[in-house]
Image (cartoon, rainbow over the protein chains, first blue to last red):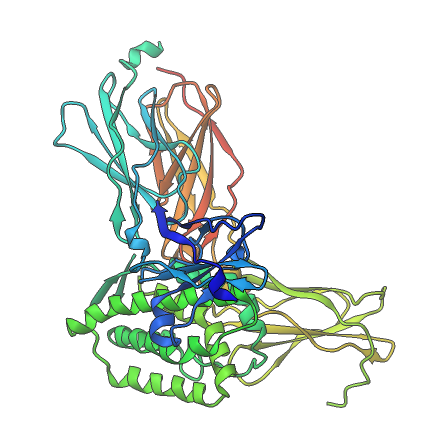
Amino acid sequence: GDALLPAPQSVSILSTNMKHFLTWSPVIVLGATVRYSVEFQGEYEREYANGSWIPISECSLTTATVCNITEDISATVAYKLRVRAELGATRSPWATTKGFFSPTMTSLTPPELRVVADGHHILVELADMGPSFQFRVLYWKKGQDSRVQQKVMKEVSSVLHLDTMEAGAEYCVKAQTHVEAINRSSSFSPTQCVRAQGDTSMWL
Amino acid sequence: KTFHFGSCRVSMSLAEIRAGFTAIKANIQSRDPVRTLSILSHPHSLHKVKSSDRCCMTHQLFTFYVDKVFKHCRTEDSFVNRKISSIANSFLSARRKLGQCREQNNCVCGEESTEKFKQILANYEGLNVTSAAMKSLGELDILLDWMEKSR
Amino acid sequence: SGELYCSLPNPRNVRFESINMKNVLHWSAPEGTDDGVLYKVKYAVYGVGKWIRKPECRNINRTWCDLSTETSDYEEQYYASVKAFLNGTCSDWMETTRFNPLTDTKIDPPMVSVSSTDRSISIILTAPEKWKSNPEEESISLLQVYPGLQYNVSVLNKKTKKRWLFSISNNTLVVPWLEPGTAYCVSAQIHVTTPVLDSGFSKEHCITTLKDK
């Protein structure tokens, strides 16, 4: 009875910032609800476990046509994914991703960065992107592009102190993400410049 | 993070392995009723391995887990099986990094690490294979704690 | 060992509670028992072939037993077990899960000391020490136990209500260019990356920068 149900088509993996999703086109059977099941296979399963496949329970008998595979695709090895359609006892053939996928293939986007001047202090706010991410923040006094300073930050839960600024000077900041597990970095965020508060006599 | 195993210097992340193990530690260790035997820590402690032998010992242990342990750890619990897969695949990529040191001949196996590894295999062979594999998996934190001292 | 017939309900929730590697075994009394229950405790180093009785926790009526000395080697892992006795009967031995002092302890926040000038505050942080039963023993800072230990320092400007976070590896921080005559409140947290261990934030230490000269 399996051959009656066609395998899902357009099976592909979307991966951005270490979040990986398997997607496929729906199998249409008029008047019926088709469900899908997803399995993965890492290099270990291929080489050491007789090519076995491991089901992803959150995507077993799902009606969705997307599956979050992030938790399972966690090692920097080559993975294969497959999905099949199920309708009652009828199952389609497996549709398997062409080629391999590894987290090293994820696309990394620049971090969301907000730069704030508070008196003589320059502060940054970075959107949290998960435990895999570090942030490399570059900053320099405007006009002194050759004297760029750098800080690597991991804690991003609040407003982070970057450095102190000379009175009245303008400072520019940009940041990129770095993922140690895959040893890759994003491109830089747009540069933002802020000006330090003027001379301290202003406080008299 | 950069690990220093004797003259071998390797940059790798154990975070995924540590996170995977932490998620299943209680489940796996509860399947090991034998308190009085250890695969990795007795009678020889990993913490007594000389720095120069660390690379070889680590590579041998990674190979031990990949070749002997993970395949005998299948459980009835899908979540546990998925975490074991995550750990096993992470071991493969970590071992590949250590392979770089072997190619640069920075991963020499001294007499001490050879002897200690023999003892580990003896401990392993002393139990039936499923018990030995489950006990070894339950001792991953012993291996990770020891490796992280090499940072 | 000539044990009695054990029909007493078992001690419950037998577990280690550990702070800065002060490792104390805790449990709850058997269900349905009031006063009069006595306990004895034993422990084992994981992988070593014998259980060891704890004499100071023999025939005790309290529901905890300090095993810090016995479990002080954090390169080892441990089990502990408790048995209850009442009116001539007893319970089974009830065990903890495997205890790894290195990963299963909680860490106190660092000690924070703050001083100020008119325009800056200086912060000195001190990581807690590993618990030692004998004061004569050599002190071991948790910094030595966890080489990857870092500090997150929060500085709150009480006037503007703005809070800044500093992430530092060494234990001193000077925050210059502050406003004179202004109150700043500092609290700090310990952050260990592997194994993942975070203390809570310390209570706030507030200090006012000197008035401008």
